[in-house]
Length: 95
Image (cartoon, rainbow, N blue to C red; front, side, top):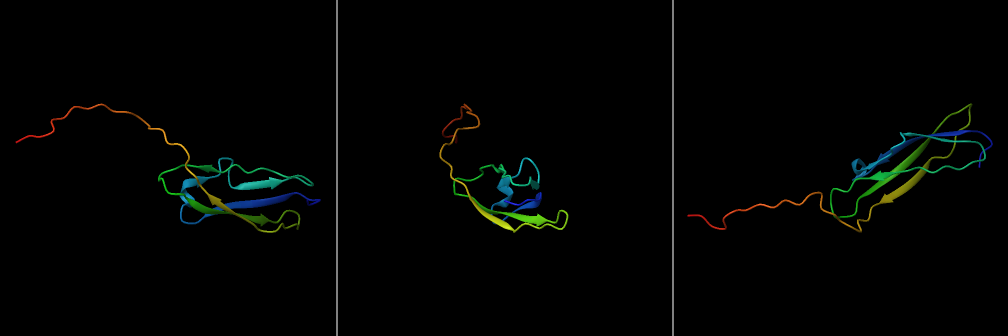
């Protein structure tokens, strides 16, 4: 815990970084003597697990810098629902 406000620039890097996003933007502010939560959204495009790294790089606020923080992000798809169901008729064989 810091006695001063800490600000971080959040960056997503790695093989599947485009599949992760930060809905509240790329700036994270932590008030003095407090903690915060960061929501990371994931959009699944494949069944394989996706991986990325969340970097929090400190921005200087009044001469105060925080330590750079690194978090490993890994997805796990547990349930799949179809986006839509289509019915179609087609001959199985035509000359």
